[in-house]
Length: 125
Image (cartoon, rainbow, N blue to C red):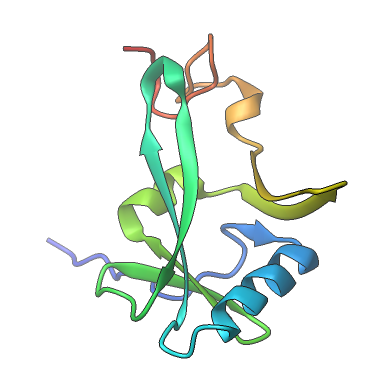
């Protein structure tokens, strides 16, 4: 049985806009004990996947790292299979400011997503 090597450094599996990187760097640099940002998923089924972010003091041994301009973004190896192809942007509209996640594969409605809601995982329920 061959052993599969765990890929710890990410390159193009996810993408972050320059503005998203700037905003995340502002957050991380304001907290000296923080080493990066974790992107995670929760939920599923007809409610769809919910994307989230939190600050991280240090990564776990199961994390993959995406790095740019001094920013480390950590993604758990299991969550990465659902996050591949996601694009993260930061938008300001008036007083509203937020990170926006776009999953280009979920919008395609192909196999592996719910036909009704686009949730990753192949079905509702």
